[in-house]
Amino acid sequence: MNITLQVWRQDGPGVTGGFKTYQVTDVSPEMSFLEMLDLLNERLTNQGEEPVAFDHDCREGICGTCGVMINGQAHGPQLGTATCQLHMRKFQDGATIVVEPWRATGFPILRDLVVDRSAFDRIMEAGGYITVDTGSAPDANLIPVPKPVADTAFDAAACIGCGACVAACPNGAANLFTAAKVSHLNLLPQGQAERWTRTERMVEIMEEFFGSCTNHGECEKACPKSISIDFIAMMNADYVKAKFKNRRLLAQRG
Image 1 (cartoon, rainbow, N blue to C red):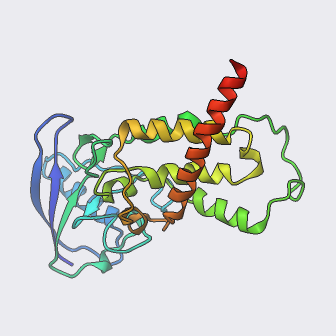
Image 2: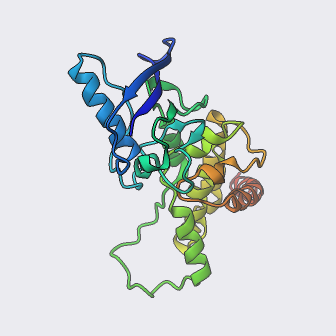
């Protein structure tokens, strides 16, 4: 395969960037999209040019590190697939492919295709954990969890935090990411002790960095794990309850 790439190049934050065109020849259809970028970078390095910076780690669709806009679609044309698992056979020989970083105010560009996703870390720090001391691992069936609840919690926990939901959202909202991280803990017995404080803190930190959700549904379509926007509704319901419950607790303590 021979591919024409139009890649966003930007030397650093606050620096004016732009697209640069590259011809990539002898691309195997079995290569992943990131392997194709590796091939480009190898040739650029051999020519004495600066390679294209992009995020990657496990390349197994688990870590959530990868992620770029490919022809205007987060992670590219194949639904339910991270960039690292997208193969070049999904493109036509001779195709022109436009590659950009995530475009969102909450994800400032660091260099080329790399963005700063530390805002996600701030949301997780606000409550994406359980502080109760559980001691040693209990027997598997010691804590009864209904199967539908366990399955739903597992679906939410599948979120890899890649940021595609934010990049695809017209408002740059992070509600699907936050809802997944809130819900997988709020659904399980171990997460009940901090359910209301967790929800309030995580939602309000999210609102500091990202836009508001208006139910376009682009986030669900772009998500490489196909996480349902139903979790956003669950989070919104818990947030309303949390505002009342937390206010009541503060009044009782005061």
